[in-house]
Length: 86
Length: 404
Image 1 (tube, helix red, strand yellow):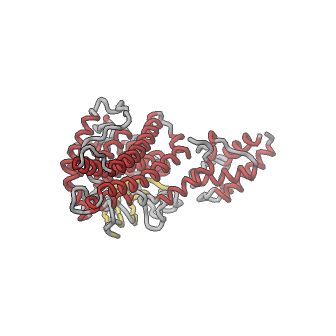
Image 2 (image 1 turned 30 degrees about the vertical axis):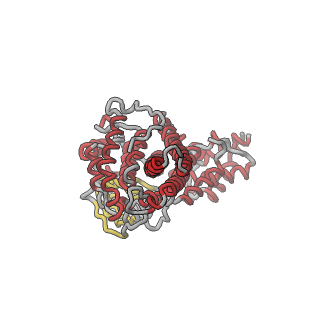
Image 3 (image 1 turned 120 degrees about the vertical axis):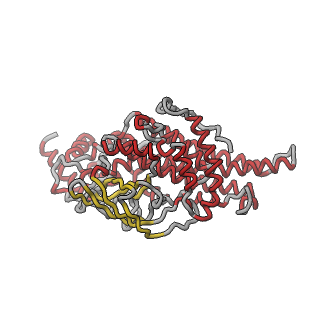
């Protein structure tokens, strides 16, 4: 994975989070490793995020990746997307 | 009534040192027969707190049944707790519900606050004083969503103040301590919640509404404006979100399912007694009602099996410290399914028992009366509304990929 891909993914991840994350703070103000659960992310909201990511990147999350840690931060989500798309 | 016989085998590993569980369960049935059942009709008619039942439970040290042995409690596991709730449910639904709700609060402290010296002390006090714990989670203005709060705790140094408008605090007038959800600070988002214990003498409960309902009348679940103060030590050291998903949600649905099974089992016992009396009149001929009894007995067995199956799964997850699995959609969906299923089956079973007992079950003044059972049973689908739970499952199933 190149740096360029990683950057694209993070931007897209932020867009998805802005639309489906139901966060209590503006996602653009959070850095990549900020704990999203501390920003109001709920496990139910992760369903919408997952579906949007699957649609956007044409990927499918296996059950084993539907854990709290997968959605913990922007970088964690981008990493998961990269792994599934790769 | 006899203790039910067809229960799955239970590991009593956690409690072997402290109590002989079978002996304890027998004692619970004695209390049920001699105390709960004696006052159940009066508690129901007057919608009054079952003070005799709770006193008897305190005397038997049942209020600390789930407290670990090291604090002086019985150290029972969730499967054993479910069996106690089922036993109590056979004699008085309201008393059993109060006991179950108390135990849910105890579990929140046992699972999520033992790292705090304040709460380790509290657990010892709970054992010696047999303190009754209540819960204030719902709030006016949140539409029944436990995961958001309007009220916020206000901390000043080591002290806090907290005011909450709670549409329901079951037995709030009779409890010693109340676990209250609220936002962690006045500027926090609705979902950033903490769980705080407020203690008798440090809170004032101003009535907002009364409790005159169809069933579970003795739970006295009126609404209150709760004004409280205390020390910041009384804030549980775990965010409420984790307490809810790891403990309150699974624990509630297991102990509720268990006590509803007890109510259903008592209805079936009454139907059995009725059928037997019928059969005696015409020896050698199986009465038609016996067929209905056979059918309803099957549903009861399924209901009970569902409760203990999830209780054992939860017990294993807790024993293996599998927090991530408890958080997972699979376990959440199964927990919700247990609630949906049990709350429907209790109505079905009591309804069938009523058909068997006929007019004798319909009467209020007959020993076969099923009026209270039927009215209690309809409450099961409404306390945490089934529609809300089904919708949550529908959302989670969009993500959940496997059958388990």
